[in-house]
Image 1: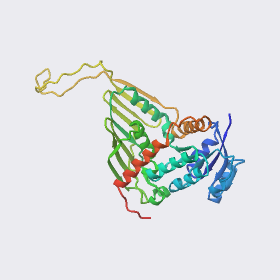
Image 2: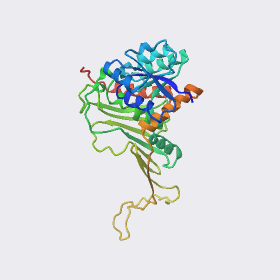
Image 3: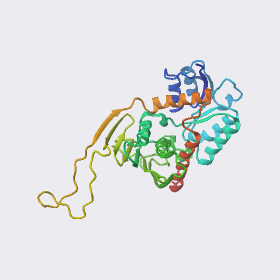
Image 4: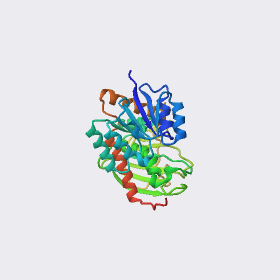
Amino acid sequence: MKRLQVAIIGQGRSGRDIHGAFLKSEANLYFQVAAVVETDEARRRRAAAEYPGARCYGDYRELFGQTDIDLVVNASYSEMHYAITKDLLEHHFHVLVEKPFARNYYECCDLINTASRNGVRLAVFQQTFFAPYYLAAKELCESGKLGEIRQVSIRFNNFARRWDWQTLQKKLGGSVYNTGPHPLGIALGLLGFDDNVQVVFSKLDRVLTSGDAEDYAKILLTAPGKPVVDVEINSTDAFHEYAIKLQGSLGTYRSTYQKYQMKYILAGENPEQPVIEESLEDENGLPAYCSEKLNLHEEEGTYDGTAFDAGTRGLYEDLYLALTEGKPLTVTCEDVAKIVRVIECVHAQNPLDVKY
């Protein structure tokens, strides 16, 4: 099996600790790191030692003209994603760009059109779409096991402070641009990426952050005939008990990234209760409240892998097949652009003053 030659732009938490770590691991069967781009000299020296045989550069434009690079991973700073990706596409490189895809929907569409015009592949690193906990929730929604899903709740919460560059608006930071592509991607995925999705409510706030971008977000989405999806990205939640909760007409499911619980009923096992107009009474003639013992079924289990291992492997394998066999990507850029469109709308609804 031919290994494709990869150049990684950036050796920060994403470029080194996610992409680099996977590409150096035994789980990677498809790619070889041929080049690394890093503006910081100390990180560049470290990269030379960590990727034996890879060429190291201080500027991504030094890749131009090199014909042995099959894919460029753009893990630069968030505010640089659009400009660098467009430059790479115009120089006929296939590109995998980190999230956020871009600042706004226009930039996303421009990148999609640029890739098409130059006959190259463009993909976005939204590996959560390959995470076992997301795939299980999606399958459950589609199975009908929980009946008609009326509400989806998604929580990417913790109790923590941040003070790095991803807390700054000028760096395209904040919870919604930084963490948001994952829970909002899950939300849109469970809504079938419906073109009619609306942001019916949103609130952004700054609570524990040292920067001027938000570290609290509450976003409600829905579409005609679809459930309400309640998305929360909250730095003040010390009791984050689940990542996804599904509430349907036949039961409820909740999961963390590693395990799940489910309670549900089966159609026909619990007889219908006719409406009684008179006041209810118990056997002693005393006022009573509606009460019954439902025949409930319970399940629980664990997932094998997370977004950072199984998800990363799945996305890279999917991209390999797209590059070598021409197969369509599971996670399309058009769908990811819809995530950015929601992010853009939420920020338009909640403008925060710029401090830095």
